[in-house]
Amino acid sequence: KMAIHDGRMLGEFLRAALQGEPLVVDGDGSQTRSTCYVDDLIAGLLAMMDAGEKVRDDVINLGNPDEHTVLDFAQTAIKAARSNSTIEHKEARPDDVARRKPDINKAQKLLRWEPKVSLEDGLSRTIAWMKVKLAAQQRGE
Image 1: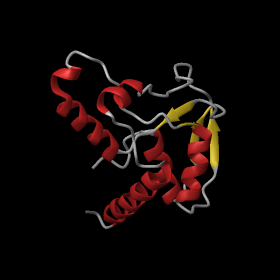
Image 2: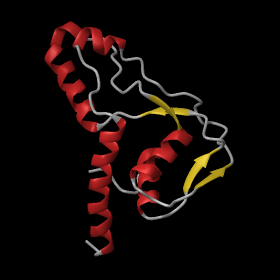
Image 3: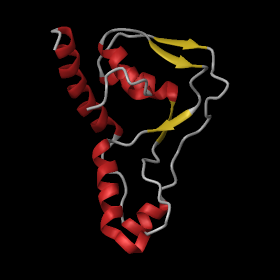
Image 4: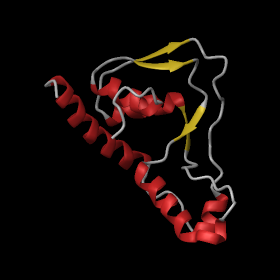
């Protein structure tokens, strides 16, 4: 139930691709990101709660270590949405993080948790949801 225009990279890329708009990439797009589908995140949170005292006062990263460049994400979003959108580059942000990849070793070891939803499956599910939301917006709902 995220907002369509929430400013998050992948959501913005998919929305733009579905609407035939250009996807805007900061800099050359070589900075990396990883995404975690909400079902996997919830499963990780539940595993943490179930672990109780075993993980009390411990810091455990939940996420997906499947790392891609921002440019790869833009290209994948266009392909997944079957869009003719283009990619436009704008000046790199000086505060942009070059690499984002969670270390989930503790989650794997202590919780026996790791993400299960592939990028392709997550994109497919998200695109289906976005199409419904965008159609509702067009109808003024």
